[in-house]
Length: 246
Ligand SMILES: [Zn+2]
Ligand SMILES: [Zn+2]
Image (cartoon, rainbow, N blue to C red; front, side):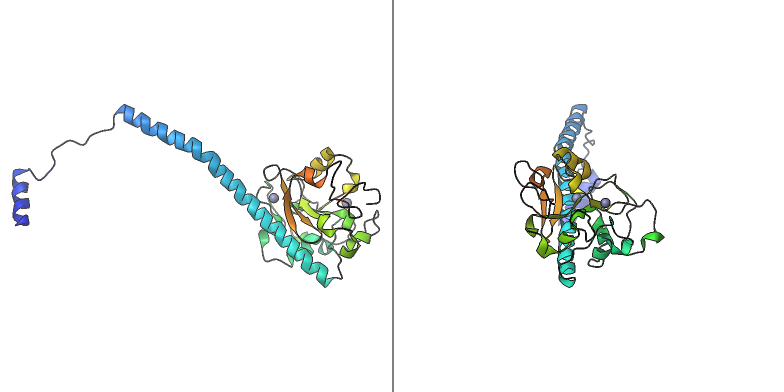
């Protein structure tokens, strides 16, 4: 029965719509373009924010892995901390190489917000790689080095540090730094000097830090160096001032 009706309609042409396709008017097009524009204006900052939040999370995961690696290393080495390149003779003695053995990730040394390129692979010998390759997005506190002339290596051992949970071991280093892996807090006299040496605002006005006890935190630079207040850079006194004997 239905088949019959359809064929009948087809014969008479009544089963097919004869109305011409309706085109958009100029006003409708303008409305659509305006709506798309508004959506882009609203969504672009939100997307950018989400992208930045992801970068911050990846960096936080990196530094947490450093914290875990640091704990494992100190346990295996009678509480000694891995040294920087400052007073060491060979790259295999640097923390960058030592802590690479505690992680499978090649991206551990890169903060995604660091715009540098050509990062060194610390699982491979340094002499086989680019001479001016980027060592890392991160740097460590050289006052904790075994051969630090100021502390005579005293603070290379965790149990000699008064408050390991308040003493910074690792922080984020500026994008412009290439063959460098450590900082000298003993040379800083003001908050502006600290800001000139670390990537203090890499993540929305803050950056990531690892403390000697292995825990990681995202802090503003003022929270690490405040006068009067706490200073987390000097192993002899952290968290307080004055840093008269480091
Ligand atoms: Zn140095
Ligand atoms: Zn970072």
